[in-house]
Image (cartoon, rainbow, N blue to C red):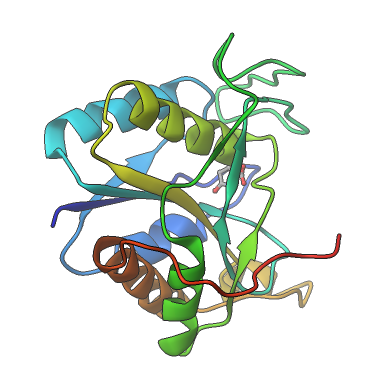
Length: 206
Ligand code: PCA
């Protein structure tokens, strides 16, 4: 089964992006680096999907401040950027796809993916918001591509914590890239193997 994993370039002045640091360590998958830019990130994603013809696509991004690996469930049709992207663009309250549905759900088995990451020894949980910046933009765009052009593909998005090197001077949560890569490997394997998602709790109270 062919799987494509994408990571992002660093943004907001950072030297690395933990998503790409981890994605590049995952064996046996196709990988692609996406620019942290509205628009061009999705053009690149579509191009690599046409090139590699994957059956599973998992896009990965940095979620600074989160303490575990989070499998995103919901992509919103909304760009609302708190900071400019790497091209200096800062859309406010703009749809990712004009006229598209308000939201898409990931078509990965999200509970099984979380369970697989934990079984591999990595803290993980379900998330119900990928934010409104470039990661959500790519997640929504991926699900729209699947809905309109690539119906055979299963896809979703995973947010990962900072690397330890990114928090040296402010002691926030972090996770080594090798451990994140273990989680991503387990998540991709579950995405390929599990047809019907597990019936486990994964919701949140707020
Ligand atoms: N994280 C940002 C964009 C790129 C990335 O790695 C986000 O969560 O939107």
